[in-house]
Length: 83
Image 1 (cartoon, rainbow, N blue to C red):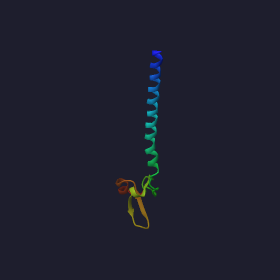
Image 2: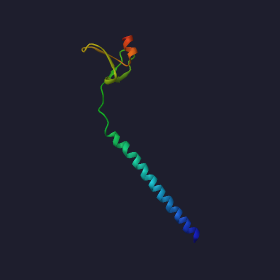
Image 3: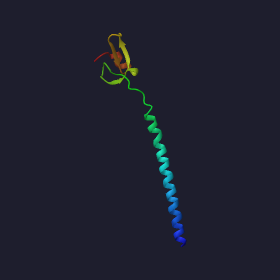
Image 4: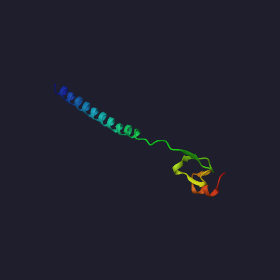
């Protein structure tokens, strides 16, 4: 009878431990789902005139006039000019 009582206490303790662990895992996943709902809108992408790398227009270095701008990914490629 004593061993049955010890076994019952162990089974209950393991059940409580697993349920708390499961609840923590669910809470850890919720903020990631909320972060996805706050994504920024897509940005315009441009290609580097030297190497062809695509990057956001806001990160690109611009050379040229407003009617025909040339976009570059780095200052080195802007100095080298178009390929």
